[in-house]
Image (cartoon, rainbow, N blue to C red; front, side, top):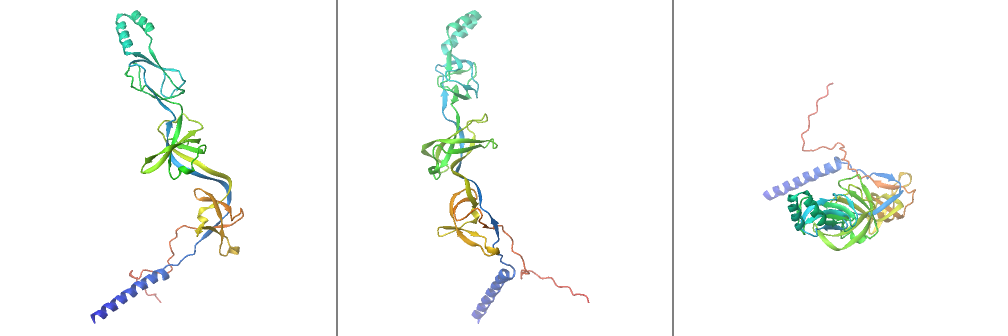
Length: 323
């Protein structure tokens, strides 16, 4: 007897749950058909690109070390200055000359002038044409033969970090667009000049260094600045373009919905797709400039409540109408 009571209770509970579900799905909610808007294919430029980050670096970074240990007598190049090969950057006194001049100074200015003219200082020369990006000395400073006096750069370039999944699409000579985090308003044109042969592990990802040479180097360029680089793989200027959201792919076939006649249901049309970028795609076959393509509206809309209510909520008593 108790077993039958348990079975009947379970059946009643199941019926109550099923009824509630049916109430909310059928009575309280109304399914709405997918809404579409009509878009026309347009002609425009589409670009297939590899986007990555990088850093501004000297193409050739050259440290200048002194040929003798001694004292810095004069500095003739400031940081940021452009210098020519063979230009004098600084004058040094060897340890012997510095000691001799100090001793002569105690004997008078004439004695000092004599030894200054007889014992000439050592000149530090620029080995290349370039820019002084680091100056590490001041007059009167004592240096050894292993101290760096200056750092020269022949020119600043951008070293891009390209993921190994994208490196196969990057070629020497491709155009690139360069932006700086420090100066978002600056956009520079450049070209890929070299792709390194050895990979490097960065954040557990294999990357390859790619040298990008900017066409012009603005005054704000500084070594170590973070950069954003877009390497142009392919581009077209008069492509037939539609939104990617209009596509439907099944069994390797890509289709779009064309507007039906007199507002009827849309009819599928198979298309062949070319280049794609952020939200747009090139149509090679299947559409014309006058095609009317249906774009599904993906905006989320809350379902309307057509009289449905929660059966577990208490109901208000209706007031009696006065005669």
